[in-house]
Image (cartoon, rainbow, N blue to C red):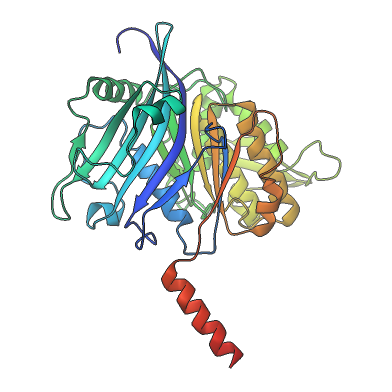
Length: 401
């Protein structure tokens, strides 16, 4: 890759998982494409608790974080780092080098796999089916449980150049809120725990948020405790930058969370701005002012979701949300789902939204069979394992007796 390189597409196709988390009995393959072999930009995983939805998302976040790295001692997934787990994530990548476009299949590899081994092999015919000209592998694998990680694709020129490209982007400034000319791919993962707790520290200064600007992967869960990682600091920082992003963030929160301007759903609350002493965000409700941590559980979950998403999106973004419905009233669950699908539509085909839920209500609202412009939907129901099925059958029989 010589010259001016941009990423025109970074779209997940398949994920193969073996001996990781609940996926111990057989290899599980998630197909992120539709019947026309096009990558989905809206995807829903459905199962009961404990069946592997969270495992899939944590694994994708860990594997995305391999981009741009030349060595690795830990991926943060126990079954990969210390067990016999292995995974392969196949992604359709289109690069534009000085006007010349090239589409390849990039397989991110991790776990106990030899350098010449793969969980899914891509033949010339397969590549043609998905409009790709080559297959490349990148990642970190081990020969056995005790071995150290070795880099995959070390001698591959394309992989080396792509890794260097991603590494060159680390820390590069993002200039917009929810829209940016930066084409480096990123993944933003939200766990099911999206609470905002009160800041204990009184040491608050205007400081750049940790992991600010471009990173291949971001993971967010409970907000607070540490000033530099807090949403309050993020808003104070955006206000200090004075480049328009603060106003965009306030507008996004007021419209999406508090439904300002909606005659039926307006909550009466507003994100007003930030105060100077102490530096923190201000929410107003009637004549009352309060902090972000005094919002309801559902409101806090959505404030974090939309603020972090807007602040860290690039043109090519994979969004992972574990249980988007958590702590939300039924109507707000639907509103949130449609809002997220709207983000995927608006940024088609560059932004993909993956959600994991155990809500049948949300599954119905997702409307898998409904055709919508700029929206390619997919879904996967994680089935009960054979061992769990036997246990449930025994339990049901005992209940009848």
